[in-house]
Every structure is written in structure tokens, then in C-alpha cells.
Image 1: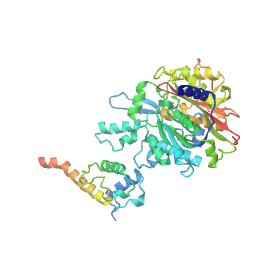
Image 2 (image 1 turned 135 degrees about the vertical axis):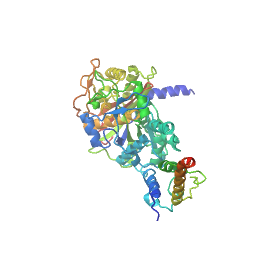
Image 3 (image 1 turned 180 degrees about the vertical axis):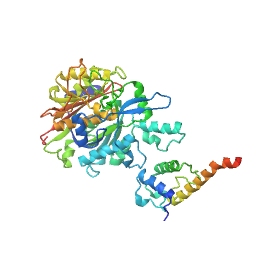
Image 4 (image 1 turned 30 degrees about the vertical axis):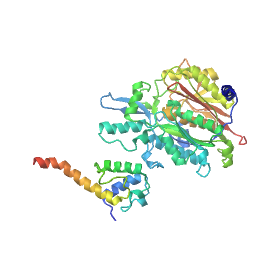
Length: 96
Length: 433
């Protein structure tokens, strides 16, 4: 079972800020099964984006598509984090 | 048939005939002087102020010290039914109301949801959240959150309260500046008396100790400068050297219920044969100035509240004054209370210790009034050494004044916009009303 730093961070947001029961917060849990409505899910995605200092493109994660699992959300975050780091370094690379 | 004549007759009778009191079956609060009755009473009857000095430093503005009374309160610990992030004041409202409902033994099974209403007041409601949000938007170039509107709207707390308690009867937010919660409480009493609902969760809040909102109050020049080394003495109601108020935050909630409903669900009295009631309410408007209060309007409101309670001015044991410690505010109120009650009336003013909680002030001060009735003692006005020589009233100062047998008390709330709201609370020792 994955307990990556990314997962632990979003689990903390769900439990502390959205008062989702800890037993519901598992990698295979779908967003739809967290007990949050569509508005709260949007707010959750915003909170995740702020926590990781990134934006998740809607084509990668539309919060209305609540069938996505927390594991999938972690993968998207990790991929976007890597891309963001790459983007920051890209200009330097161009000048090199 | 002339409905105008009928209305005139009904209105005239409403002015003359006192309606029955409603039971106060629970109270709860989040205040700068504590969340428990023990802490609240200790500060109240010892005149212990929670006011502290706070440095307001905003780029482009001169740094300034302002007096603030903040609550030791973690809003993140409050769970909302909506699961959405909560404005700090909304979280306080939920916490206070949950405590009040618990004390009243009020559960979803014990009241018909269609007979349950939420009547709640706030002066600036989500102003603190909006201030934080615009700081994020303009200064930090961050996005607006999807739920900004829902946390900022004036009925944000009312909505969360209605969700939490499953209230189907009514959910109304009152925005009457510093009289907001007093108006909400009084209007709920009217709704219960009128038979529209049986039970109401009432009260109010304000929590906006954020830089932009504090700067707005500072710009009005209505707050006192915190004295060096003794910031807790900043707010000095009715004192000759009064200089304005301290900004507070907090919430207070009460469960109001018809006597018949209280009995039907087996609510006993508050212990030892004593129960507490709200017996009178009046609201009106000076209609003279947006900030400068008019004694005549206050006199009319106090007399109307006494008529509504069906009691005489001589039966009131003490007045919990609005007492903001502004030059004009205290002068108008000292004159109006003197006119209604004469110079012997014991007067207290608790904003000196918990700050001016604005829309929540009326509810917090009603709680203080009920505690005074419970202890049969009037709390002292903290920081009052020398009353203004022009005021002729029995200000309670130094220590609490024992009032054995005190049964009735009045709480005043006088707001910007000239809105006056007056509540009369009572202690009933014989449980067989």
C-alpha cells in the first residue's frame, strides 16, 4: 500500500481541512467516495495545488470526474511537480 | 372592511399587552474571556480584561498599536456539515451553537425540524475572510477559492447552522451593525410568541481581526490607544477619560423555546428551581444620524422593551449598557438610561473586558446579563475609576455588586445606523409558570 510523501500530504489535507474520516482516506478511494460534494472537491483540488505549488491542468484532472482515485491524483501531482521543476530550469538550460 | 384600521388596532394592542416570556434553555459561547461558564464568570465578576495591544503594520501605512481582544480558538477544529472551509466567525458560531444545544439537551429527535429556526446576527460577517482572500489575490497573485462567496456571504453562519441542526423553519441573517445579534434574538422571540416556530437557535458573531478590517476601524478613530504597559485598560466605559473601544471577536448562542415546548420535551429548569427567560424586546431607529446616537430613540426603545415584558422600570435590577466607551456613545446612553430609570439604577458595561464584538456583542452581553441574574450580582465595569462627572448613574465599579433577589435585567445594543435593540431577561425561581 502506497504511503508516499505525496499521499501523506493529501491525506493530511483531507483529514484536517475537510474532516474526512481517516478510514476513507486510502490510495484506492475514488474522489467520489470521500463524502465531499462537487464544490468541496473543487476546493480540495485547489488546496492540493496550493500545497504543492502547482496547477493541475483540467485535462489531466477534472475534479468533476470524481471516479479518479487518490492514487491517480498522487501520480498526477508527482508528474506535474516534475514538470514544474523542469520548467523552472528550462530557461537556464536554454542559455547554457 | 378597512384592514388599515384592523392593523392599527392590532399594533396598538401589541404595544400595551405583554406577551409571555420564552425560555432560555441553553447557552454557549466563544469569547475572548473564555468558552466555559467558569472562565467567563471569573473574568466577568472580577473585571478581568482580555484586551491586548496588537501591532497593525501594513505596507504604506504608519505602524500603529491597537487594542484587540482575541479568542483562543482554533477554527480548523470545527467540522461543518458542508465540509467546506469555514470563515473564522462561522466556525465560532457553530461551536457556540453546538454548546448551547448540548446544554439545552436539544437533539434532532427532540424538535420538529419545521418548527426549528435559526435567527443569527453579524455586523461584518465574512469581512475577515474577504480581507484574507483579497490579500491572496492582489498581494500574492493567488486565485480566488471556489468557495470564497460561500464563506463571505452575510448568511454564511446561518446556512451552516441550519445545515448542522437540520432547521427547516427559518434561517435568517440579521445585519444591524452592532445590534445585529440583539435584533436576531428579539425577532426569534417574536416568532416563537407568534406561534410560527417552537424553538430557535439564536445569537450572533463577528470575527474580523484581519489587517484590512482592523485598519478600517482604526481609520474611523473610534478605538482607544492601548496605554503603554497596561493595554488591558484601553476600553474604559463611562469614564471621564474614556477614549473608545477595543476590537473584539467571538460568538454567543442561545436556545430559545416556548414554555410549552420546553415542558413537552421534559426540559427541567436550570437547576434548583430556577429557569431563565427572555421576557421583553424592542427595536427601533433613531432616524437622525448614521453614527451619532440619539438619546430620545434609546429611551423609546427601552420603554417599549419594558412594555413588551410587562414589567415596570422599578423591577429592573440592572442595565447591561451598550457602553462602547466612545465620547458620544456613552454620553447618549448615560442620558437615556438616567431618563428611563433614574440615577440609582446599577449599570455595568462588559465591552471593557471582551472588547466590542460588534454584531456578536448583543448575544455575548445577553449571556453576561443572564450570568448576573444567576449570581444575583452585577459585574463591575472594568477600568472605570472616575466616572464622567456629567453622568448621573450607579455605575458598578471596583467589585461586583450583590443584588439578592434580582429577577429582571436589561441589555442594550445601540448600533450604527441609529438602530436600537433592547432585551429584557429574567430569572424565574418558581418553576410552575
